[in-house]
Amino acid sequence: MKKFFIVAAALVLSAGAAMAQDYLRLQASFVANKMTDYADDNVKPKGINFGGVAGFSVSDNLPIYLEPGVNIAWAHSAKDIAGGGEIKFTYMTAAIPLNCVYKYEINDKVAVSGFLGLNNKFNFMAKEHDKGPGYKNDFSWLSKKDMGSREDRASFYQLGSQLGAGFHVSRFYIGYQFQWDWMNLLVFGFWGRFPSC
Image (cartoon, rainbow, N blue to C red; front, side):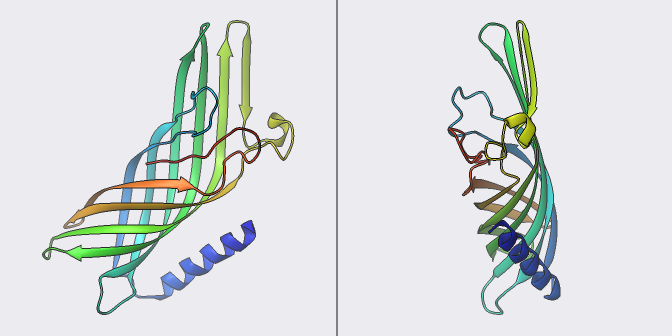
């Protein structure tokens, strides 16, 4: 199933590259992640996302665009816990989003847009560092060795969605988006998903 989604994303991006490109946008944004079912609510990494999208018109009559892109995100959290301990968590991911965008042009320099799309996310770092009086524990959620078994480690791939809206002024864009994962980061146990905005 994972291979199917990866191949599908590659085919969509290839098809997009063959169409006439209408716009290209580089972007940077703040990200805030939250583990929805994490037992003691200590892992809420915040960070930054860098990426780019290309917009391709899909209709001659309507301002509808297909937006494939690439994003790299880094997030970190550190929290003191009872008894003098500390939990640190670092998370890095690469994503291939594909959005359907409706862009309404107010005039030749100002526009507003809204979008809905799919997000193929590849997790390549999820490290936790726990420290307290008399103990220290460093481990990777993606490691079979650190998590005890292949079934208990975090997923390298997650499929999800995003929706958002924004303003375009000349070449500048400011907006807001909300992402949610359809697949849990940690498949088994009480671990939850990573919604981010």
